[in-house]
Image 1: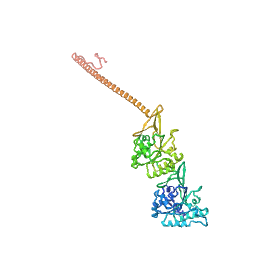
Image 2 (image 1 turned 45 degrees about the horizontal axis):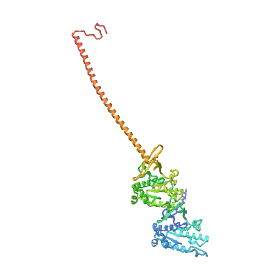
Image 3 (image 1 turned 60 degrees about the horizontal axis):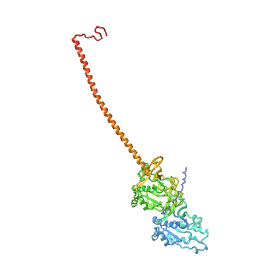
Image 4 (image 1 turned 30 degrees about the horizontal axis):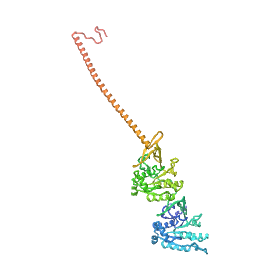
Length: 581
């Protein structure tokens, strides 16, 4: 019997990747760009292609000790050095350390004439020398259209592109090749995207005078990757991509409870406050106290030593601190202690997705326990309601994954139902508080409703919400004749009830005194009757003794008399004549 040969499958070799070091990009690519292969980064003017390529090299040199070669066809070394100095990249220093080589290749399209064979042999030799000179692991070519701008023969273009990309692969360098966007194609010639192993498309759109940058991975051979559009930010720290597009509902659910900062509100939430890591929505019209509720929550969190990040879209930091001091809350002390950080900006300063990126970056940097967004309704000015809802849902999911408690305020309109928020995100929220103005007796007072709070028993009672020098207070409201009484009407009702209570108490005390008096009287009567009874009993006992004594004396006398007269004794059972009885 022969032993059958086992057929074994070859081990699957996963695609090696080179981390870019760029925030968010490595997450959505599953680890970075394909190692030893070229990646095409394409997009319109000003979308950030050159920055992405240069940052890929700088991060490689500074974080992964991988030297890089940047071959530019448009900007000289001096121009690039000045441009990237504003982002904190010291290209001169990296060049001096042989961590970076920048080669400017001047190509003038007007000087190019199609005569005979055209190839990139000279460029490839020059690039190969630069790579070997510093032992480069990374290469960036910016932009590739400059090489073929004067040519129209598509066959030559395709052939030379393949040759260039094959050269980069043979050198084993991870390369970024930038390309300008065509009218209906990702690149001007529409060829590069077919040759490259990975294609990243950068988009820079302006909608309603608000600009937004987005990134999309068009293809990635041999690797799974995110397919949605991801907003990205270019600021003093370079490229930053928000890796959130859509998240699953698999975030943890904490059972820890944290105080709202208002004792009575904690009592309405089964006495323990919100769940940690949950989302809280406070809606209400202007001036109802939404920001004050947020300030109480932040103040309570900072007192516990937790960190809070406050995104304010209506007021400046100093204005909020001043206003909160009027109700007895000093938020300035928490800023000084590094527990509270404000981000104050108008929502129209940039696009909605950019807000999401900025918030994501600040959350990553500050690592807060509490995030306040005040108010989310202002985001509607930067995008449509549907887009705002999408953005907020991604933000809330992201915060829940990190177990950060989200506190959002929403300004609602006075027209229509109050249980309708401006962004339609109430279904996403775990706890929903409604602040409403109640008009009675010529007064406007605030009322607080607890509309929902998932996972806990909670009050369904309305509370009057009062802002005073000592902070927010929740008072019971009175319901009389079908209306809720607040303000002076409530105070008058309280005084009336207090007077009634005093009268009732006095009546009770009077009746208690009457009972005591009757009790004392009856007890006295009982004592008198008892005394009389004892006296009469004593007399009767004395009479009884006397009667007994008299009977005994009478019997003794009769016996003595019989003895004296010698009277016969009667036989028992017979008469004196001897007759039976």
